[in-house]
View 1: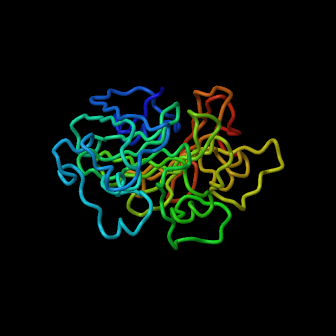
View 2: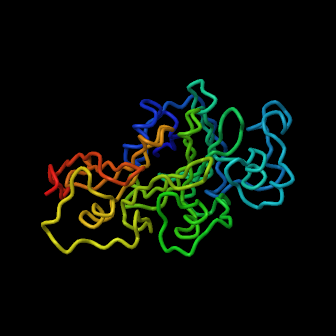
Length: 316
């Protein structure tokens, strides 16, 4: 069985790796502690207060390690980001298995509770220090875990950079997986929504800014995400059309079409913020990239791996 892995170890080159790497699933990890619970015929454990058993509360009292559910949590019949362990136990009961990942960081240390077995288990992930939910895998569709859509919606048929999370949920529906990326830098903290992609390793993802809850990127490997930098842009009918440094974003979209992956690269300085557009090549390990200034929407650079970009060294 492939283990569930927290994305926490990806802290080297903090932002560049997060921005540049395709949304793949890591399949190796150092697990410090694993606790196996007795399987219950492949079903989720029994629900209710009886779930607060000695397996997860060796100190003898439920509150020793799990905060009591709040009034608002009791009103909600589902788990979401920030829910307590007590809330998860009350709704799902004892997990089949638990594992912890620890590197001595209050942001990266995590604990995972497994509720099904197999290659794609249902998992709830907690911040190990706070004991609150920071993500989940809901492959079976039976976990009562979800992001609740609010009222920040539009009538648009596609989302784009700056769209609100509420609109993404309205357009795409509930994600299959949700995970929080936090390395202790508020500017880089984000929530990634995962949707079924081309296969197990290549999922479609939407990157949401943690604080503003606005879209700051996506990976549309399957083409099923309704995401577009400019939904109204039409492709150029000329095969000879080319773009170069200084070309506008709209020109790129007309010549190249919509990229399959978009990353908003920001470091807190508006003048150096860029939008990175990625296009697939014949080599699955390579991507062609176009760098666009966020401030004036013009091309500032490109990497034409695979020769798929219709680019020229200078404007005619």
